[in-house]
Length: 450
Image 1 (cartoon, rainbow, N blue to C red):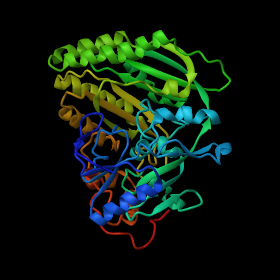
Image 2 (image 1 turned 180 degrees about the vertical axis):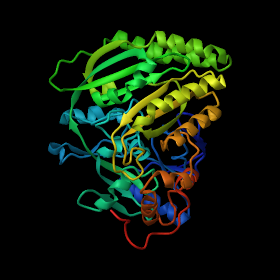
Image 3 (image 1 turned 45 degrees about the vertical axis):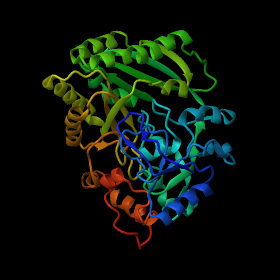
Image 4 (image 1 turned 60 degrees about the vertical axis):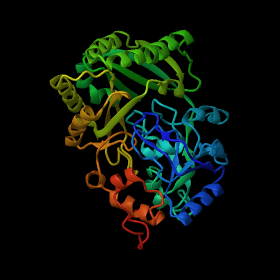
């Protein structure tokens, strides 16, 4: 345990806090002791991962738990069935090397791998592909410390009724110490990245997402084209044809990070150059094809700081919603330097998953971290709400419990589990109080309906 004097900031610099103290437990038992000590002192506890959420979901007003010591493969006794138990503080970028001896891989990934596995799953991180759910759908078991300091296991053979809540728990149910993942045999991806006319992509949206293993696209405001990314899964023994080091560095580091960072800093004091930047980005968009191991294709290195809002809407609503966003930007005369990202995911049954009960399209908007995103995000948010949108838990939004209760059929069931596992509100913070509402007392009737 160390006394804190430092201010903690998230990656996007949208949240900060000075915890009363920071603890760095190195075992499940140490997490228990930390929670029990906080309980005796009447303090709140929040675990923190990589700080990659743009909301205040990980803000710790009292005791911050840094789980950086809870890493690596904890249990591999079920590796033959494709299941490994991983420490909650393990970073996603460390997983490929950990999985390599077992020749296993995540079934799907997002395009950023800086997060911890607990942070990514607890906030609903996802990739793209209509046959695949978010990262949390790959969890088949977990151990967590409850608000009363009890270490419990949730798995198909133990408290299985809690799995739909615990897989994506927002950090509201307890402190995850490890998760058991259902993995797949490692595989290659055949990546095709092409600029295409935006209207053609929107007109063919449903066909494209249904016809590919993984399809997504980026649209730079002020342009008429989209950068499409289509990834096809191949077996591990297929021929690997990775990008050359020089070409990858030019595309992914020099242009996507170095040149783009300079451009964003220039557009901040001179917004009029944003359309010029967008057109240059359009001209420099990747037009490439390669085959590589899945993490090398899914993940893109992002070093330019930004702030993000993402909404999940019914799959068929995506073309209309993006056209509205485009019209909005043109009508308001805004100068937007960051692209809009569009993805899709399968329906799943996790209670607070943004894809709960429906095939889902995702539209994410961004602004450079030195720019004020409020007006842009608020206007886009209204477009998404009008189309049945659900906000990503780790990305900026203004929704509260009253709105979210109507958006999630199992919202009250989740809140009841929260009240049962954290009866004193040990894991609450201002963000969770806003999106889940205040604690109304422990559940006395057992677990909500399964």
